[in-house]
Image 1 (cartoon, rainbow, N blue to C red):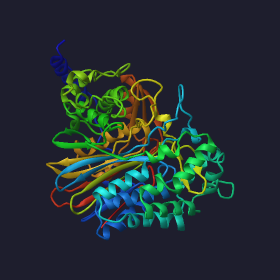
Image 2: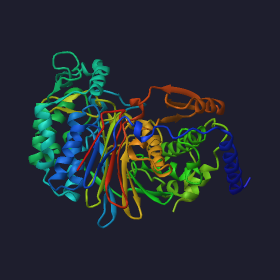
Image 3: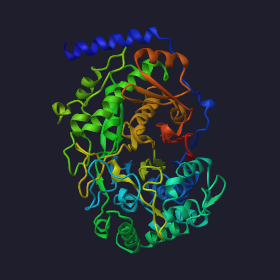
Image 4: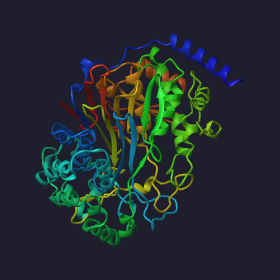
Length: 551
């Protein structure tokens, strides 16, 4: 059958099926939100922790721009959310510069050390699991190129938090307790998180004086203090003693790089997301697959909407898995994956009355022409920053470099045993992080993102659709119940309407309910800008300790 004809038949089936299934109203009304949406006229920061958000706002109120604020919050969140990011980790930032209306991505993904090797799978913990960290280089580069404040100023809040400490939240206390066995195997990490031999509890104060001193070195010496100075020596010595592959030469050779973001569009909105080797391509491809369908005529938690999104998500993720890797090592078919003609061909594969048995990667060449943290910042000049950082698993490699307070990543496990994402010296491994900026008529509309491992590639499209298709506020969009398809298995929060669950079961899904507001589904943050007034509205995820502040 001709693809155009097939698509029209499927569209008719979708229409008829949608009419036959009782719809339910949009799930969580704004008045029932667990966290109140925050509104402010001038500047705003949304992050995974209130103290990190406050660090960014402090810099904003002193006259700093959104990049200054994002960098301050990023350094601070590595202190107060040490399970998810920090100096031993990495990340990527997407920056929208309202004047002159351009976007850039700062890639500070970790890289494989020259001596790293493994046959089938890298270890998940220990020094041998760690790649060359990128956080210090990336944040310093973003600040130098696009910020206005000195490094010493934006680091001051993080240094203070590390020195004086902060009260541990129930969320962080639970994560420490859940990882206690692994933490206790490393003396330096145990000294930070279990100073008296037992995990720190909620309400206790976590002080990190060694980390404060490391941050002071960076404040005075910049990125070179991390990659060339005493800190580099301590990291290399720890690696040598602990059996890791990162050397002083690997550290000295590390560079953060600027890349053009990937771009697409959805119903008149421009989508700007993080480029390979991370997940923005999949996010945009999923939105392109969904665009031909009249999503908004179905309630947000209706079986029609959930099934359509699950099928589109599975195709976007399959293509990401097959094609996306470090673009310095692999020719990624970016134009093909972003092509709307290719997206339409993928949409035509979707059977609206039955779940696909197995979804394979497509062929975009025909069209060629857990454990992370996200934050967003906006200023009164229209700049937007969407930034995601990670150490991979919670507490990364479960080791801290003695005398530094630096918890190392375990990013080497994100390489694949075969395909485009295989290990190579200096290569950046693929991950799903997808910080995204949305523009409307050339002006900043939203900055959003989420942690959540594989769920990042599925949650981000849900957030975008909630905002664009349903006109939700940012807090309502974040709090709406989520789901995640993995082949025919559909994990979902148990807030789904019973009628939707029953209908999805009839479609052939293997349904896996999870608790309401489960941490499994990430911890999204976002900022929405009113196109008429410029007023900022921020949302934070109750699934983690997210907080929004503005002025």
